[in-house]
Image 1 (cartoon, one colour):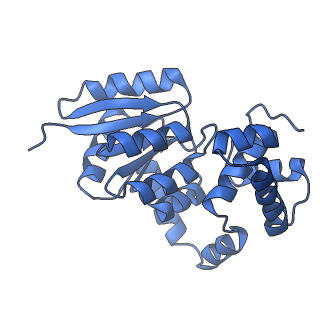
Image 2 (cartoon, helix red, strand yellow):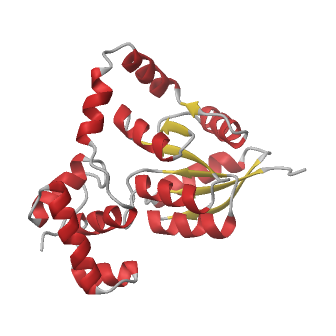
Length: 226
């Protein structure tokens, strides 16, 4: 029988990763096996290490949390994912849980709540922080029309299209994207064209604004429009 729950941390801020690592290592039944600085790194580490629980942010460079959740769930479905975010928007919660995350906490949560959440999701339970739970309960009391509106607003992108969109929004040139994704420049151009057609947006600035509004990147990141 395992003596501890193995955890992989992912956040693009070093001080945040170090802070959460220190908090979790104070727990006798939890062991942090690694930490990741971006979405692409957390996917690779999850595949290699197969931790019990991945604790990750949504807003991360190279690959956002939404897409990272989707790729981890597909590659290693046994891994449980707990999202630890600064965003309390219920649409974010709905999106990551629909993709396979089993828990959602705000970053201001206490160490006690975080450790409890890790234990619960590792058991296979769903766990929401107190403030998120209140928002979900409030939403359930509202008109069902809201869900219908959200479905109409959310345009489904393929995994690769979502990756390309994030890199476009982060200001990467086609050559840089091709190297990052290990595909040809011609393939990158095809994905860019498909994105523009699907979203009915025909310029880089528009794609960037869409990525921000959809939560794919944060609005306060440094963006380079080419």
